[in-house]
Length: 472
Image (tube, rainbow, N blue to C red; front, side, top):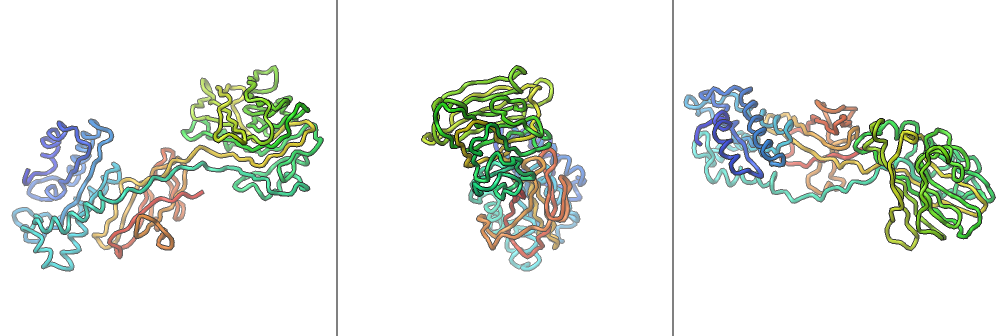
């Protein structure tokens, strides 16, 4: 409808558009809201815009909202429809795009640049002082539409597990597995093992009872109940087959100093997996025998040689009263292509704390671990929403919202193409944060997994690509 502002858009056009239950909607009233003859204040313009977005999102939570700014206007639009504060009305659309996670197609900088540097061409693209003609639409508007909406899809980043501890036991068999072992990569703690295990992962020959553990403190317990509180403990074990007394296990413990020989007398076990006599696999949930332990003798039996063990601790449902999480056990023989689930079950209050992880066992048969790792659930892949890059007012002020895992740390990088190849990838200097915490040039997402940061790339570039890069 010609000459109408956002009050008409809200009252009349939005109800009509809702009858089509749209998958996507373009909204642009900033040009006419800025006309002083229509008496729409900046606050009313913002309120009306948010109300229209609310209406479409109420009908369809997945609707794609696309906001636009349009061209600049020449001074000779007065006295019929002067727009002295047009740039301020356009800025409202940029701000709302950020706060609402809407797509923004910002035509205004391109028109202003053309008006400032090539007025004759600008005039040739306009049918009057306000409206672009067909040539202007094709030459100025369509390229920006294609750049924002027609970019080739970027393959999503596959989330990978965050490795908390890892040891490939590449040390010497003559050295003890202790704090000097260099193979623990991202740990804030060291092995406590004395001489019971060697730096190559081998159990000390003839050692009747043994243990090696890593003290976690509150690493797991402090995150119980969070959406990403899933932990996977995995190891590769080589052990001789037969009936000779032997047990080797991996597990989570609820004590800072797990007891020795927990494989046969699990005084401190909470969730662990045992390779036992006759080459059986057994899994446990609980404390020592006679105190609420749940044991499951699993198949297959007669396991010889190498086996991969995995214990998955899921504490996302933990509330400390009615739910204490679950544990699931997996195993994979050397000849098997994938893991097989052995058992699973709910945890209880008696085994609801997790203060250490490690190895333990006993017996006289030679056994050796080739690998040991504790990993957290895959992080949420970061995404950028509500992007605003302002090249119009000669200061390059911009902002963007980031979504990801709560507490995750990111920096922004920019490049000239979507490949983000080096050496074209450059850091983006951050100037502030309205959501989340800014530490130097890094941003920490808040408890909801969001942040909104400001940055300034200047005005030298006509186009750029921005992405969030995780910081370990």
